[in-house]
Image (cartoon, rainbow, N blue to C red; front, side, top):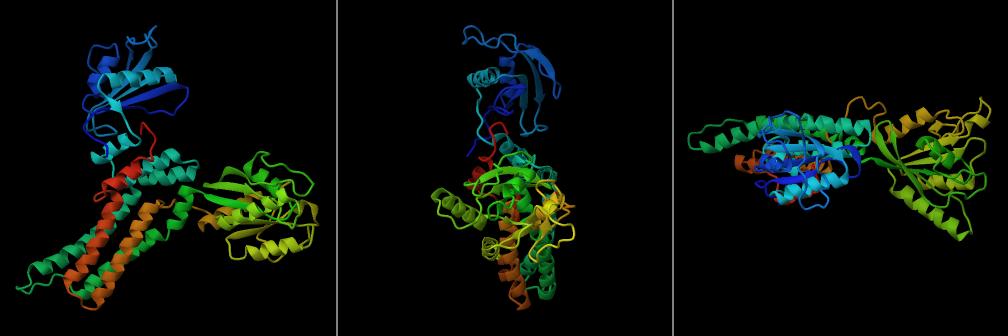
Length: 454
């Protein structure tokens, strides 16, 4: 586990070259170490960006950073990201300069920060709870505006407040049951079994309301895999290129052009989708194409959504029907492509969900909405999901199971101490979500996924 008492340093900006790079120092000796690195002799003023220069490096010949201009900002405890004294040095974004600052800071008494250690210190010092800390990593990793919005909401405390409201009602029930146990001889009874059962049901309903949004939240946070399938020459690769926005897949009239999986990450209405183009589904004696067809089938089996593409100009073939039958139990959309080449009066087949033209773009907006709706269960996504993290979902589901047992026991007039066992178990899981009772191993697992410098 990380030690929260020493002074740590790391580059806080992405790897590579840039206009500006930031080195962050946090801990009790951060101001002292910063004074060793810069030429300024007067004390740094709190929360004031100070222009100065780095001292020349004595170990380098010639000095690598002699006179380099920097802006230094001091954030005194507790009003800083970590809750400790923090100094941030903004320098020119050269890896040579930034790594040199880190090296000199280590020589002056700091140690290299581990992944997520700055955010962990903020958590340990009460700057944010565990939900908000995890949201920091989600926000950094966000690749769509909707992912960023969900992370922002959780960082702002939206989920924390809903968990706190659930916990408050549960705590009241527990307190009244415990009070009844404290005065058994006096005959005091602070809550009737029927009322206890009613309060537990209210808590279960509140958890159910959160969990009802869980699938949509996870889909937004983690993204989805969407596989485009169909027989050769129905326009799968053309549709793939249209949805991606660039010509990633080879398009040719010759059947069997696509022989391997081609994938690209795209934003479909706020959902991060890994779109996969596959080999045409058909019987073939070509060994390489046959392997491509097998890979296409395996990809469809594990996809979150399968797009079955049909040719609007032609009747259903044996290969079409075989693919329709094989994917019948999967989440799928059946698409008629090439509608620009058929008579306007022609009607879609029964299985068809949406009609498009990959050549002209007709129907593509509707297809995107259908994909988003099939993945999230909500085509409009007017509200961002309150819960999206698998850890939170698992703990809430486990807490609900504890509460259901307590609710059943209350209806059977079970003694208070037996009810309390399940209620306290449920409350401990709520505490684990926000980090009040989280084990060291869980904290290590969570924060080691962060980037260095955050």
